[in-house]
Length: 378
Image (tube, rainbow, N blue to C red; front, side):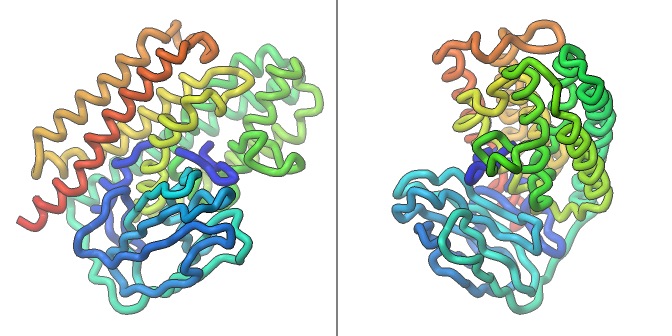
């Protein structure tokens, strides 16, 4: 889950890889396109400043800065309730971030969560000359296959977990919990894009009002902190219904890659800056299971577009492959059979080492967009 009052986040640059997947609503990434329109947004207690904006159709760079707000820490661009791009976790004055989108003509929502003002409007005008290629279509197909495979696995694993909760078998539910978490963490970038579906499935206790706290983590709390599945039947039934809804939405999702890209962009930041604290699986302490699933999801996204990168910068492609292996190697000492040690067993030095390996991967991934743009322009 990556929604804080806002939410935090994987993979700073995998997002930008999907800048290639330009169709109706375009692309997202953490690096800016030099030929794009730039919209600068300041985060204030009121919300987004400016409240409304205009831009021509095509690539747009969003540059966001916290102008001193202690409560507004993220900015999103939405099409209806679908998040196309976002920057989160700008929690202190002066913190900055960016993402890029390619947008067609229409009206989009500008949202600075927790602000005093209502959502603003981004008005995009003009024609978008969107083009694709067989290579890009193959990349999209590769990721779609991975997405659908893991959504099916999520549904398959959630059923027995929910059944154990409904039967009041806390021990069995505990044993089945991790298996259901893994596919969700792999596809989280897409799951996050469907409005309030991700918070219903994956919100942590402090992410939503107490009356709305449900999903995986409410059951996790009951199983590990309260030691029982008693009273969790309605929560479990709703969780299964929400996972089924997610599965249905994934079957129809348009992989213009916008929501995939932005989710991938934010997820690495979450692992390094937020999940590294152990807040995600705070009752079961299976955080390392989540970490590995996040890395696997990021790697699948990179694998989908790697053939495109190899045409422009094969050396960088090989370096990124090596950095993925380095992250897996950093996780390896903590593996125990099919799982991992409890996250509480890790020292500060351990978590620092993990964060460093993930940051190194993110740094290399951030070079990919420029390498691809250079190659296309040649």
